[in-house]
Image (cartoon, rainbow, N blue to C red; front, side):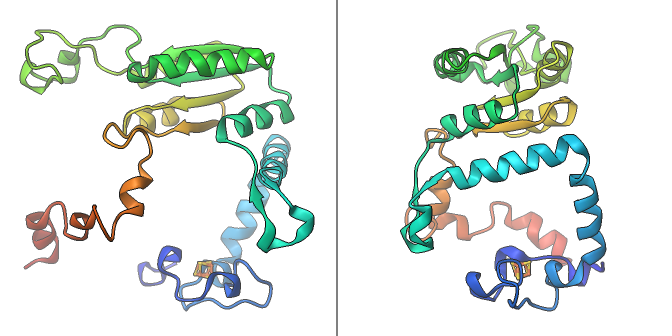
Length: 240
Ligand code: SF4
């Protein structure tokens, strides 16, 4: 696949119901990966056909459908039926998981306690791991006191997502739930953890952990995002 033909599904010009990925007789643009990437599609299907993955994919799809009521009344009458926490519990139960990991941010310690209680109420064993595990100072990241969140504090504990992952791996959790981890710390955890993960909430300090609020208001309160955050950098990469 050439860079010129890289997928740009997010700006596909075809109306959604008429797209090749949605409709057997649908259309796609010149760079449509549904129409062009049959080899990769076969490879992805082969990966999905590994026994564990296939079952997980099947159950995730069943869970997706179970997230609606009125399915017998047609697409236009569909109604969402379940919050994500319920769907998370249901998917774990569908998979017959016994032991779950809960990797959470210290900033959501109260929410983590509730989530652990909900999981335990549903019969799961829960390993919960706070982000500040191990109390490793930020100086280990070559950070100065001026880089601390609290610049008055001589020592500040770093988030330790790799240790969170190692702990969950060590205790052989079967499915991990991420709750409010920082941008980047979540990446490190996902890179190092063995069992599949789902994100219950993505951290957004400003927007009450609802990051899409800025996207929904892109044409009003967050119109400032229409300007590049780093204009000088953009110019550099343009070569201008
Ligand atoms: S897969 Fe093809 S049809 Fe579907 S969104 Fe992407 S480009 Fe459009």
